[in-house]
Amino acid sequence: MSTEDDFAEFVRVALPGLLRYGHALTGNPHDAADLVQTVLEKVGSRWSKINSKCDDPRAYIRKAMANTHISRWRRTRRETLIADFPDVPAQQRHDRLEDEPVWQALRDLPPRQRAVVVLRYYEGLSEAEIADTLGVSCGTVKSQSSKALASLRQRLGPLAEGGDV
Image (cartoon, rainbow, N blue to C red; front, side, top):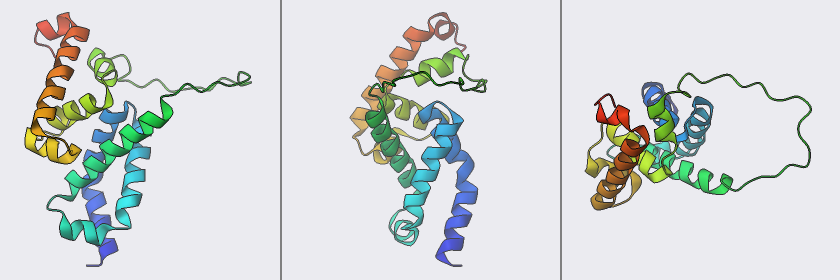
C-alpha cells in the first residue's frame, strides 16, 4: 500500500473522531472542519515519517489540533473594528447545541482547560495520554481538569448539583 493510500485510509477511519474533537475544541462544526483540514494538510505531507515514528498518529494529530487551535485563538482574540456595517446582514443557521447549557459552559472555558475536558470526557483518554497529547505534565492535566470542572460546576449550578451533568 502506498503512503498516499495509507494516509487516505487513516483519514477515512479517523475523520469522524477528529471532527468531534475539533467541534468540542472550537465550539462549532465549521471551525472544527477548518481546524481538521488545516492539520491534516500539514500532516499529510509528512505522513510516512509521522506514521513510522509515532506509536499513535491520532494522538499526534490531536496534539497538533490543540496547538493549532490555541495559536489561532491567540491571534484572533483581538478585537477587529470595521468602518461601516455590512449592507446585508449575514444569515446564520442556528446551531442546535448553541442553547445547551453544558455546551455553552464548555465553550466559555479557556482553550487549555477545554482541551483537557474534551480529551478526557469526549475522547476517553487517560491523564498520561492527555499530558502526552498536549505536551504538558500530568500535574498540569490534573490542575487544568480540576479548574475546568470547578468552573463548569459553578456555571451550571443546579444542573451540576442534580447529577444531570
